Length: 214
Image (cartoon, rainbow, N blue to C red; front, side, top):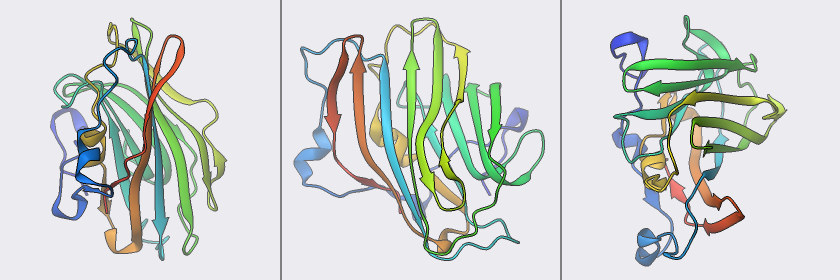
């Protein structure tokens, strides 16, 4: 389980089992936004988790992903809990979205309730962060799995942040702070597959560097 912090929050931490492996050439590590691009207002991350054999009674595995407009969790960020919910108390199964400002929980939303139960199933989803200059929104869309079926409709929370853009977002930070917090032996892989950056006029760039959490 992840350590509990003041206010009931559990921060994602980089653990030895969650070391990021960049599955590409060394040059791709230095991927950067084109200098002439418009300000980034939306970022989409495509994720994939492959199970080997989940354990329903033990609610295993449990995993967490994180997105932040900054390469830290010192101000605003979002945390997504998978196959468990923590607020207001621990509940098996499902998905729960949290948004934070420092140690303060701003918003929370629970979706789904089933516990992962299918051997060798693959879970794929897109999670995104978007600013309109006032509100910062974390959302999940285009999710697919055997246990949860198609998911991601109306799965979002918004908080006031007054951010003009997401220019300080870093994909490596998202990957480094994703973790299988319980039952890592029941997971074959957890990978941030690709990242897309959008401006007001649409897609700016796509980063296809796979970032392997485990």
